[in-house]
Length: 629
Image 1 (spheres, rainbow, N blue to C red):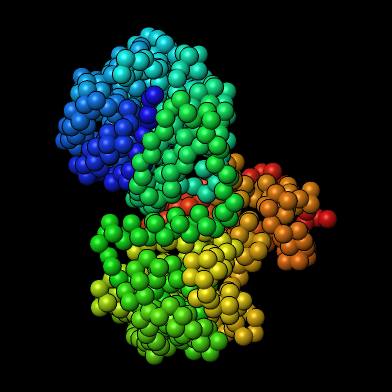
Image 2 (image 1 turned 60 degrees about the vertical axis):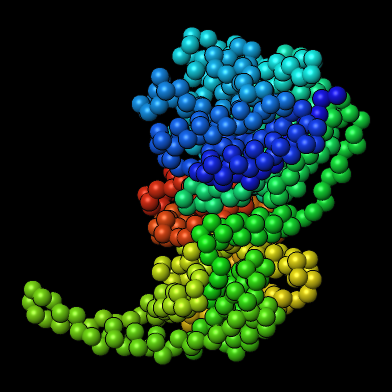
């Protein structure tokens, strides 16, 4: 009876030595458990998101060398693993050496060649070139190779015949995107389906995205059911990045039987190895569908991502500026769970505009967490900065004339924010021996509702891919489930969100941020996360049809509540669109790395240019029509 092991390993990007050691350890474990086959993830040797490290020939040679170590370790066991494959005699379209994203199979120290492939490995067919993926920049696809050889991918894509203990098995080998073929001109799975296979294997390096696992179970379960054979999906865990955006890899490796049922799922964010007897899978009971709320998955992604990020940069202590607001409170509760309260310093930095209410809530939060706490008032230093700016003459060296700067109330707000971050938090972090956080949420990041070199500063923006309503949901989840007690004070959850930078943002009078989160969260989300991104033209079409809330997914009645007239609605729309496509882009470019959880995170996932706001012809027509009514 054929026994197949799925090895869910942590892949450390750019460190083939570490990854190979993990692979060799898992091979021994699989062998000890009687497995005939052990499956590892896509790019298990080098990692996946490496930037232009792929252009280093020395690194590529190292990956080949470690790949040979894995092949040599395959005595009496079949090892399936992902690695970069190099044809040193050929070039990619950019003139650099030819590289393939490849699926290797080794047995008894030798590679097993797919039936019709010109190489002793399977080459990835479908190259994702959207969101965070940039495969075509570095890798030559099977489609390109087929054209080069004067044939078709269907002629090259072929099963691998395995000879194990006197039996022959035919395996269909796929690499990640090859199983997600809805929008491509052909489907590798369907091509292999004609080959009378015994099972499929999909090795993946698939970053966590909210809701992706449910969709994958639908897609891969249907594939297994229609083919009538089991399918093994093996994904890695770990943290990888492309500079500006940081992605968690959750694993969730899954075995589907020939009925399409999920019969085994490996845990999120944990290394694990499981062995399944192939012949018994059809009789295995389907695992119950998870009833966990989305926020539970988001919490695990954030906790794991923060923990691994800190480990990667060797940071053990954290400083957070807390205001008595929800974002900094949730950040504090998160980091306290990761580093421990003894390694967390919370700093409250009140000015004359901070109420006794928020100062008291900050103290209550710190008490609940049992962490380190400081209160450093900033008004004296803010006043000093303003005084220096207004009383220091500005000399025109060409004419010798002198003038003086005038600090407006808006500039004074920015000085407060920068004094807190650039002076207090940066200094406190250095003295404490750690780093300070950026606590911005996704709504603020969308429209640049933050201060450059102020509250937008920090080493990581862990909440910047969460809308405000998700931040509140996370607060409730941590209180109810993670801590099992009220850590984020209910007062912080109830109070109006406010930056408290002026008397116009007095929380005791119910005055807060200009962003109306119950509506704007969803409006801003339509700009970013819809696959066909919304523009003001789309929004005005919805307004004209009376379907804004339906299309955005927000609560009914909010448009009329917030915007009594078409002029009010259009003014608000243009205000935020101008910021989203204007100054906010410059701020996002300078923002800290963002930890991704959504289907479209800022950074490398959402690529943008500083071109300024644009309104289509149809938008201008709609605007004129609505304002004339």
